[in-house]
Image (tube, rainbow, N blue to C red; front, side, top):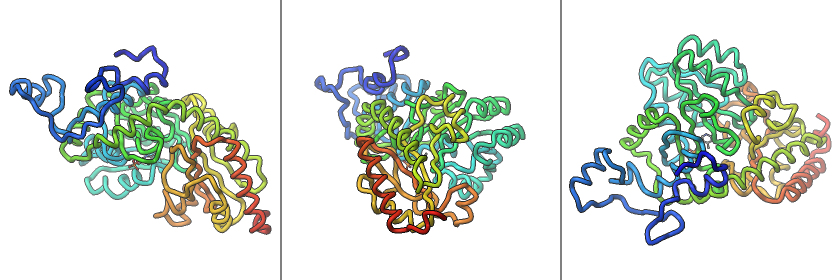
Length: 403
Ligand SMILES: *Cc1c(COP(=O)(O)O)cnc(C)c1O
């Protein structure tokens, strides 16, 4: 079915689900079958050799998983899509299947923690060279890309300080150098940002986060140019980092409310960011929706909403963070993001735990930083919760407040 005229909220529900399912089921069944049988050997052969469509073995493809892949493919306006057991499965499969000895990657210093581990520890062992530029320094990136590279890997907004990079500008630089552009779109989601429309060749997501939306399933998706997606799929079907039917079902189910959730999270995060910005106990707020954010103009041009994650630092030491976080009532102190329930934590113990205090400072991550992933709770309740926790900080650390 052609979804080109439909809005994203409609597409998220119907994509992959317009055919009738088993016994007229109105939702995609969870097909917990390892293999798929054929009465006709010639038909089996045609499916096995890709001449006709169908499923053979669930490490390769599965009907429930296919529904999810169709949803993300159409929401990102991509030619093709495939999926993985986790977001890191999507990222490592993409990098390892498109790169090899002698190849060069240009990326940013602020990629997701697991991704930067791939760049710093694993790719160099395969003679793949990696150059990580200062996030947001577009001139430096353009200069590095122009030196010659095979793949430009981008992420925007970044974790945890919500830095923004200009996708269109860097995709143009990459095109000139003949490099493939890959974008991690996890923070923005396809509701807020479509990197393929800005010149990227491939876009990937940790489906564990906003796409699933309920913190109860893990997955990863990749979509974009058919030839490139197929190359990554060929590697994934052999190395086996495949998504299973049950998490695929949960993620596809979560995606039906993606637009509703993201619209609410965009609005709540902006309101909370403005509220915190005006609070005397808060030192700094990082959210691309704030006019004071250095990436605001680029974000406003390439995103239709600024997302559900913000971060902020408190005046005072790490002890104020401890008091603040443990005083919050409507939050899980946990490592993930993008759920219906609000999640928060300090990068010091989550995404950037392996770095020293000096390395965190270099990335512009204050020790008193808090990442706050806004859920879909009522925003008045969340703001009241933040206010009472800030009051608890003021009561417990009256001197540090003025530091
Ligand atoms: C969580 C996350 C990942 C990794 O995804 P997993 O599903 O945890 O493997 C990659 N990129 C970003 C931006 C993330 O937030």
